[in-house]
Amino acid sequence: MTIIEIKDKKEWEEFLLQVKEKTFCQSWNWGEFNKLMGDKIWRFGIESNGKILAVFQILKISAKRGKFIFLPHGPAILEGADFERILEVCFKKIKELSKLEKVSFIRIAPIFLRIEKNIKMFKDLGFINAPTHMHPELTWELDLKDSEEELLKNMRKTTRYLIKQGAKDSDLEIVKSQSLEDLEAFKDVYQVTADRHSFTPFSFDYLKKELLSFKEGNEVLIFSAKYKGEIISSAMIIYWSGMAFYHQGASTLKYPKIPASYLLQWEAIKEAKKRNCVLYNFWGIAPEEDLEKNKNHPWYGLSLFKKGFGGYKKEYVKTQDYPLSLSYWLTYIFEELRKKKRNL
Image (cartoon, rainbow, N blue to C red; front, side):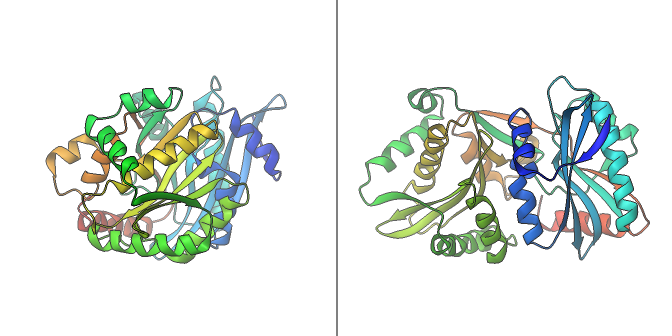
């Protein structure tokens, strides 16, 4: 197996169309977004006998807690390829880069299912579980092969009822756009949500660059739920490589009896079917055991909301860290303390 650098977007994206286990975090446009955010990026392929078997896009993150090399939801590998060998080759290249870039650790958010064999692969390479995650390790997904009628039938009864009630309400409408004006409106609702759940929201600059990066290929839509002309729920949905991702979402509690978020999600799912997507990814949910132990978990309501649409959970190997210097452990302690503070 040999490493090649890939500089052609068409080649990169066409390969990923063949990969089953993937998220937009390995998309070309996600790399472009991270460049706009000031991060260095590299795109590599792993080939054997002239055939590409895997690709991996890596970032150099410069944060207050230290500099590190990050592989988000990767590597993306063809089914049937030798996962273990590919991971070894990928890791060797990342280590070489890490030495050149003088970072304190390597972080990987694997796209490998959480089974004992895959966990052992990382352990054997010297990785440890990271104190935090940057992208979901546990997601909720909905297969879109069924008709709209079947999808509704498979939802939780309450979810289905609220969608139908929302559709009947003449004062409630769902608007789709890619405009910065609607992103401004999303930001305002997003801030209300952040204040309610005590988390630090992404900046408007971050949201704008994400929107512009995916807008180029018509791979993003802002859905705004308006009640009597006022936006009370909003979401940014990424449509990429035959999949849809509920990546950013926000809502107010001004009209608690208006099922705006339910109707909004249903419209986003219908849009995914129009675009011939095979999967709708609701992004992260909290582990069941965490929800049972802690009813005040910040993701409690959101996790129940997502599950109501039907579907199944998917668990990936936990985020993995490979320490390269003693300074890594300061990062480890900082992230552990921050996680406890956020009640996660």
